[in-house]
Every structure is written in C-alpha cells, then in structure tokens.
Length: 290
Image (cartoon, rainbow, N blue to C red; front, side, top):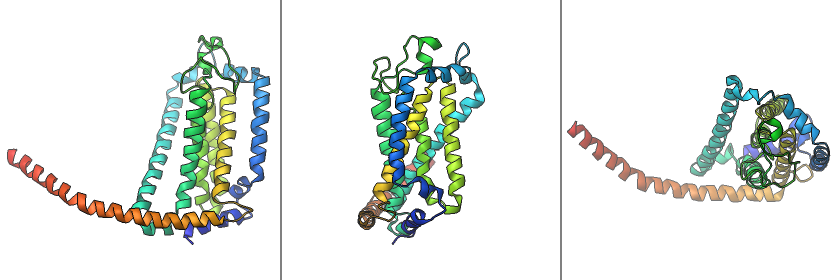
C-alpha cells in the first residue's frame, strides 16, 4: 500500500483529527439541510443581503479604492493560480516518475483535482455564475447602478456571464480544504482555522467591493463544502474505511502512470537530442555572425 494512502486511512480513524470529524458522512446531510435553510431564509428576507451590502456602501463601495485591500485580493488570486499550477506539476511528476507512488498516490492527487473540477470550475462558474444571471450589488439601482435585486436561486437576464451568484473566489478558498488531510494530523486544527479564516476574509472582501451579496458567499461555502465531502466519501470513506474500489483504482493508476511514464520518457529520448542539436547549430551560426 502506498505510504500516503496509509496516511489517508489513519486520518479517517484518528480520534483527534478535526478533519476526520469534518469528513463524516452525516455532515453531508447536515450541509444539505443548511443549504435548504439558508436559501429559504435569504430568499424570504432579502433585506439581509441589502443591509450587509449597504453597510459597505457610501456613495460607492469605497473599499475598491483601498490599495491594501486590492493587493490582498490580487495576492489571493495569484496564490490560487500557483497552487493550481503546482497540482498540475505534481501530476506531471507522477507521470514521469512511476516510483513516486510511494509518496504521491493517485488518490492523493485525484482528491483536490476532482474537487477543483466539480466545485469551483463546473458548479460555481459554468453552472451558477454563467447561467443564473444575478446582477452584482454594485450594479443595483440602490447602489448607483441600474439593475434590480434578484433573490438567490432566481434566474435573471440582467447579467450574461460571470455573475454574482455564487462567489467564485470563496469557492476557491474552500477548495484549499482538500490539502489538509495530507498534512501531519497534529497540524489539522491549525490548518482548518487558517483555511476558514482565509475564506471568511476573502468573502468579506468580495462583499466590501460590492462584487457579491452575503447570500452569494454563504451558499458558495455550503455548496462547495458539499462537493468536498462528497468527493472525499467517494474516494476514501465507506463506514470509516478505505473502499476496495479506491485500492483497485490506486493499483490501476499506478500501472497506468508507469505505462504512460515509459512512453513519455521514450518520446523524450527521441525528441530532445534533435532539438538540442538544432539549438547548438543555431547558436553556432549566431556566434559566427556576431
């Protein structure tokens, strides 16, 4: 069994791991109930959205002019891109180095990858943000725009793409939860505090900029939390133990990685020498001309 897969098994059984408690099956039901209740309350009481956004409005959403806050947001976006790029590099390393399964398993890479695809990319951006058409707070007539308020889950034609419902940056922040189980168990509590604190800060920042309503960030947290729990359970948790399917997929993936890794290395041996030779000839001609 790959070393990190054993570690995932220990995470589930570890009685003091906050992440293990967070990933329990019953929390799926709790989150579904929270999504329903939050949706009902926020639809029934639109004043909550308007009051929260109005708190940050003073003849405009002045936070957008604060260079420090803008820098924080830019840093957050850049950090997320770097983490995503790092995940791609890990996949490539795993392909090119089959022996890496001792420290980087298919399951370890697939968990954050699938959550990223299903949560922030598909659910948040492709389905909700691009299809629901909810205008952002700064676009409302109440806050200096010309749009009308649309309750969460209501379709609208006031926005064509990249709309307010739900928050994409909040969903990316919640995605960072997927990296916690691969830290030492003693770090889990601190990591959870950091991730949830970061998510709260980014969410408040988006509200302060007039880019999202409170309902956008609340439902983004709950919906993407559901994706995290569902993917974890599909891969790793069936009554508190690893599934036979997970082990079978791990074995199959190791064989696949080894096969494609050999192919890539063979391609590398065929392609790189001619490229190096061509580069050397070009540089020789450049030196002769100069």
